[in-house]
Length: 62
Image 1 (cartoon, rainbow, N blue to C red):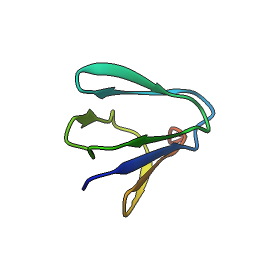
Image 2: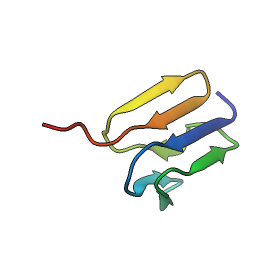
Image 3: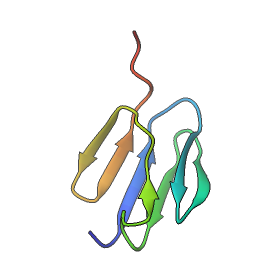
């Protein structure tokens, strides 16, 4: 997968790692990564994956 887009549907910021650095995806923001997911580490959370779009959902309520 070359380019991937990550969209946050969360009410809070979402932090993940890209090439060993912490990246903050602001609540409700969109971020594109040109070289795909090879260097991306996404913490466990509710998400939906559609083609080259990853939608980060709010934490699952208990």
